[in-house]
Image (tube, rainbow, N blue to C red; front, side, top):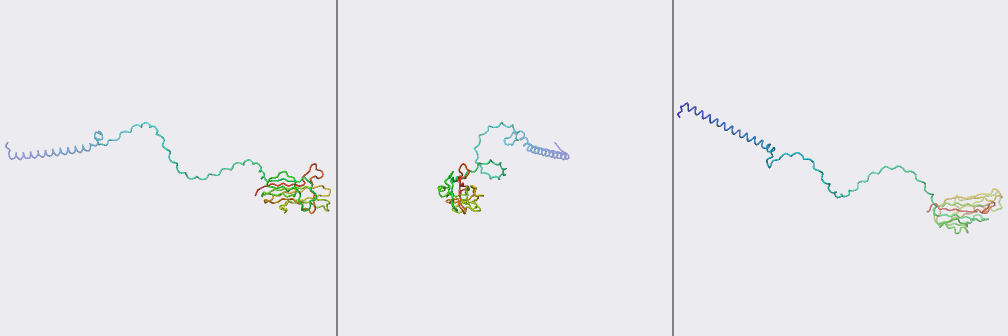
Length: 263
């Protein structure tokens, strides 16, 4: 084929155009390939997540299944060690006072006592003289009355607080002076008159038969001390067990002794 000059120029232009078109087509194909690869890379994790066809992918958790039946209760565990004792709590409020209880029995005697007396007429007991007490109704070991009937002395062997009561029935030994004086007696402890233990009486006339005197005291007595009664009148006295008008004898003199508190 023969080309003319103008034809050569046209051929070259056409060739250049073809080559440019080819280059453009190649560039578009590369761009399309690259875009396709990028899209594939971007969509690949979503496809893997949806299909879970891979072996190393992380699939989403499925829905929670229904609760299974309750298992059999296991055996009880061993008891734990006892804990330490807690602190003492505050004291509670005082309760209301209870009702008064019933009255108890009367306090018994301490167990030391004596009752001595005389059923005899004792005449002309001089001033300072001691009447005798030969009769005994009751006595305990704490009181010695073995000489009361011969000397009128009573020995206390147990120390304590004692209640002592004495009585006498009598008169002045006639003849009576004028005016008629009283007659009196007192309780002695080791020969010394006990304060507050004396008593006196008088006959309103010589024709009166007898009168009665007596006293009660509470005193402290040491072991071994002696009790006596004595005439404290300036004249002699007569103690009478059978005064005029009595059907049965009376005690001419008596003494009751009771221990209240031992020491």
